[in-house]
Image (tube, rainbow, N blue to C red; front, side, top):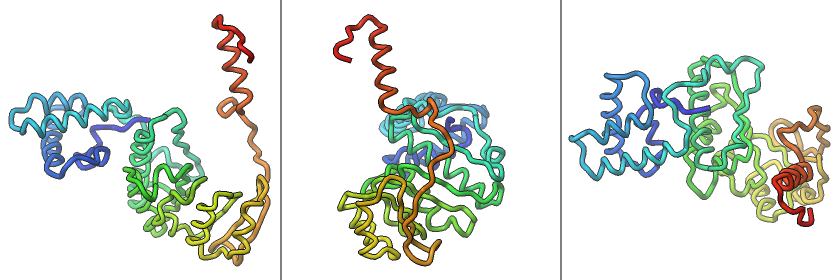
Length: 277
């Protein structure tokens, strides 16, 4: 999945560049308007060339804009063409997965998350796609409490306002203490598995009105597959057992031992010594 540059306004591009000023964004907006008069398909490099050849822009402003746009090109996320039709992709009863496993940069992950969520939420508010549930894994990376994230505002917006547009939100995190309180406070039901970190336990106790101290004390002793359900979905806190998954483990997610053996075999085949493996 890539981000389609011609579909972005100057203000949307500026969301990927937190340092950009309103004045510089307006200059970028004027540049995009000039480019669109001559071509329909263009990428970030086309914008950079246009800015570089312009003689009506302050040199310092020009250098800053070109530098920031160059930094965006290095993410390899941007394209001159749209490779996904959000409206056609979102069918009733269909699960769509945005797999970011191969992207190591947290900045790139947040950029794609912002682009993906914003487009889907806009379509949902305009009633162009079915009612939707957004499930965000490792949510504390995309909507942190004590640090900035370009994807934070859209997640908090969906958490606050999504339900009236039939757009629900499910946040999954192993570190709830690092998750935005604004987003977490809008989650009416919590499913809590084993937690031993005292900071996370204290945080859950302070932010979950439906959980009492006795239930909280049980959380560190839960076994694998056991969880506590609290909130509006149930009348009182309830411990339950999660059934085993029906899907088998695939090669997409091999276990640690399998990966270690695979690496060792490849290492030896290249002529290296066994070296104790």
